[in-house]
Image (cartoon, rainbow, N blue to C red; front, side, top):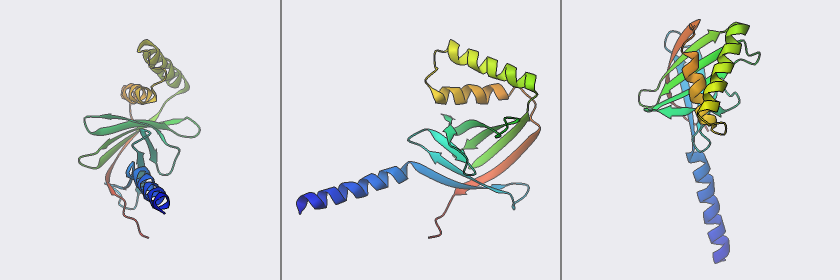
Length: 152
């Protein structure tokens, strides 16, 4: 009986730990409150998901989650910065030409190899995020994010 109680107790702890590493946010556009997005931060994996998409790696710098995403067709790149203190999410959208995209990939790859960080996906996220900044954003959006409340 004691073993069963112990196993049950450990199971509850295990379930609690896995949920504690996941943060769900609802983000409302500052210009259009009808445009709402969601973010899930998986702290244990150091990954982040925007609007239910596949989680990708982020890096945390001075309390700001920074990451980059690409559209399915790779035509658009998105540079996100989420301030964990203010809840402000800034999204920069880039539409790179094929030539710009090739240069972007070459430069990012070169920096990762030079730093000998091939296995560090969070470092990749940092380099991609930083490199996109040198291009002109075609659209900038700002969102106020807050913790999502469970409805049931």
